[in-house]
Length: 191
Image (cartoon, rainbow, N blue to C red):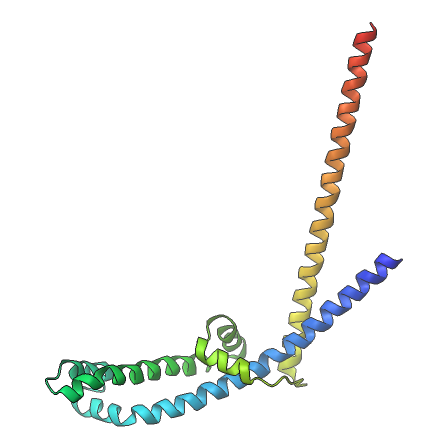
């Protein structure tokens, strides 16, 4: 009775935790996307003058502009080539994030969970405000997460109990076998 109550309570706790965790997924993805968009706007403004020059002189190739700066005999251009490279790299990195988040909600969420930009993910995590949105997408994520966590817990518990039973059964068989061997040995000794 007590074990059954504990199991039921644990299942409810796992399901409830999974539901609350899953509901946060779309909200976090949305806040992450907003952060990416803000950084993208900023870096786009930073690179726009360079992009204009690259469009006019290097067929739009920003990397060719960076190489021109790097190989220039002008000391100012040469020194600024590393700074320009950082701006261009950041622009491409954030642009890639922006494009990855344009996919459907599941693909975007999986990108954020497994392949998000570390810097932007850390910012979003630090500034994240927990919410309990009650829209269809949040409820779907919540229920899916809760069911997956509950199934994992059940499979783990069932597997562990099965292993313990198997080990005990093997020990009992081994003990019975030892006991039977001793009986046979005693019968031979009595003859």
